[in-house]
Length: 496
Ligand code: ADP
Image (tube, rainbow, N blue to C red):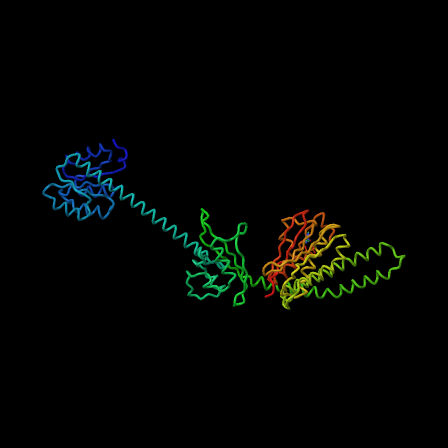
């Protein structure tokens, strides 16, 4: 006996007892669960109590006739399949029953096999339609979940206070949230779909978004960062990150746009404050410094050594403070663009010669050799404020002298490469560990180890150098390792 049919409940409705019992026997053997009703009223009662998969329904019965029972079942249980049992004389009625939703019919008298075939076919059909319905429900649910997920993500992106732009691999805008449109002052009827350059006329920004969308963010870097100011006087910082599929395929980029106007204002206020305080401190400090010199000079030979020592230390300290104030003022001049404002073609070779000669005695004081190599064919002029270049090379060579031991070697080498002038300041001094390479360009950062512990400084020299070089459109490169010396290379564009 088949067990897969045991959950299938079939109702046989016929006023002839033999037919009812015959059907029960035949179908019971196939494992179906069979109930019986001898008239329409009883059938409707049973169907209302518990649903049946199939109802075998005699059309011609006394009392409530088959067609009416069919109508009731179709109304209350549309999933129930009704197979009508009909005598030859009622074929017309069978056709009418089919029109009203009966699934099949079986003429009387029928053989057991005929009944089995008709019922099995109906059951198979029912299984298929149940399965189709289940799949459809599942599909609807998946679609609903997907839609919900999408609309949730969209709502979150729309609600973000920062701007978000999603671009395809060819840098066409797929999505831009309202915050971004506001930050970029785009019209309200904005339509996505065009290349990012169509909406935002900032060349540097467009180039980086295009590169991030193509997946060109270099290894070891997570995104491209870019800062620019808008016509509406906003300062924006953007971060473009490539999006990749699980298999690593580039799907485009997400760019986050942040309004940093407030930060810039704060930064400017801070710089102004530092500049003001430094300025105020400079003259009294210089006076104290000079007065200490006078007191020192007037000390008689009999004065205690300790007094002389204390006064000398005080003078060293005031010198340190004066240097720091000078550096802070330099930095604020760089930040306000003053250092590179007064630009003219500068002869780099002459500047280098002057700085090297000025610092030669300092190097020789430590027994170091300081050499300058210039190309025979000379160097093309660089557009800069001459004093700013002196600050740059002066700082780098002074550092080389400070951070190289006695009898060390410092080589300044200037070359021309295409449209650039490259000046390398190389020493065979202490060198710098890789982990400090970026940090030493931050303000007040100083490496503290056994070599540098007793060397005084402000930690402002390299930030000043970097600020000036970048303002001149150049770059600063560093190659260094502990014990192997350091090479700082300034790359400046030739003036056009
Ligand atoms: P300062 O020299 O006043 O400390 P800088 O900003 O000029 O400040 O330099 C920051 C730090 O970088 C220094 O404290 C030093 O540790 C390191 N540094 C700079 N130049 C060299 C160099 N040529 N060799 C080794 N270390 C250096």
